[in-house]
Length: 99
Image 1 (spheres, rainbow, N blue to C red):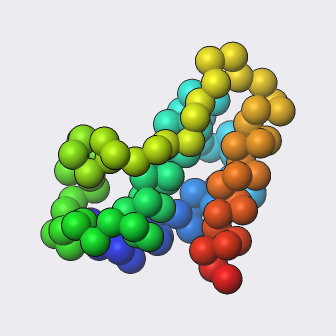
Image 2: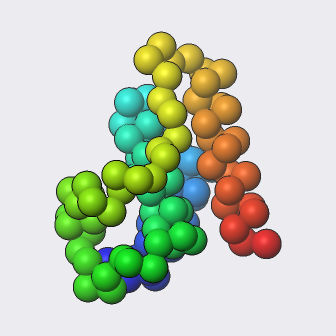
């Protein structure tokens, strides 16, 4: 997967969160998406080992790439406040990254 595909995915996720969060499905689906986005963030910013030819599916299943990364924690008992905090954390990273 190229870095541009990573960035395109992050932009899509950002747009969906802002406009139609229900498109992401249940809260557990959203938390899984945050996990993926957080790992993409770490790869883009800190990991030069990412092969340019890596496909999306290979990225999702390649545990070696993500084993040392710290995903955004997901609480067992989700509520609206937890989701809002998680969303805020993600959007703050996007803002910092774009600066």
